[in-house]
Image (cartoon, rainbow, N blue to C red; front, side, top):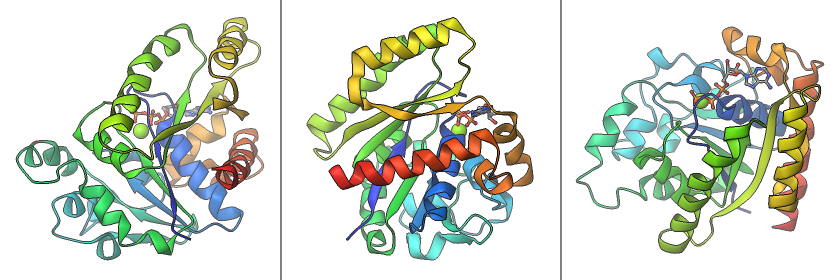
Length: 257
Ligand code: ATP
Ligand code: MG
């Protein structure tokens, strides 16, 4: 069977997209899934956080989007993390402009992925904090969107824009696309407001809210400076255990899809 493809997206910055992408990738690898992690953000944090030096890459997602390389040529293996990486670096910022005038500009990633989809069980795409042409390429390629969010007051407001964008992409560009779920991250149960927002989320979105909750855990924040997801860096940390639990929940969810 071909890979199930998921974007990790939220146009809000710093909400835990990259942390979720790399830890879910490592968690899935740990439970025996074949995984490709695609970094679609010029910041290259998911690349570095997977132990791949973005400054030393010869080929990246940029070359794939401009159709000067295939994913098979540009991907690298992160042995430590147990998954493949299609990396990104600052060069990708230029793609936004360079793609303006080309054909199939919103479907380039989709077409490139089709050529390697048989090699994987899961393909995860780390999106930048915007609803840009890059994110659009991600959304056009995916079966679903995973939305990490912090349970704060303004989180719900930002969600409306994202949900509307996903609806538009679904209607016009990619009929497969759906919200797989909202993932509560950096959760601190001692904060009453977080509990309240979490309850609101469940009553608005029902079973679109993942059962797994990712706690705020400093080990997850420390791991990137060692070029590793928390799941690899400190498997026994609470945050790492939660991400492996989330990986298992994802494996269950796709059986029902
Ligand atoms: P951007 O929008 O810039 O791409 P992002 O949405 O990818 O950001 P991350 O980089 O994953 O967000 O996380 C933002 C910061 O929060 C990072 O410093 C990260 O280490 C930290 N962080 C993420 N998740 C947790 C967590 N569960 N507990 C503690 N710190 C966390
Ligand atoms: Mg990020």
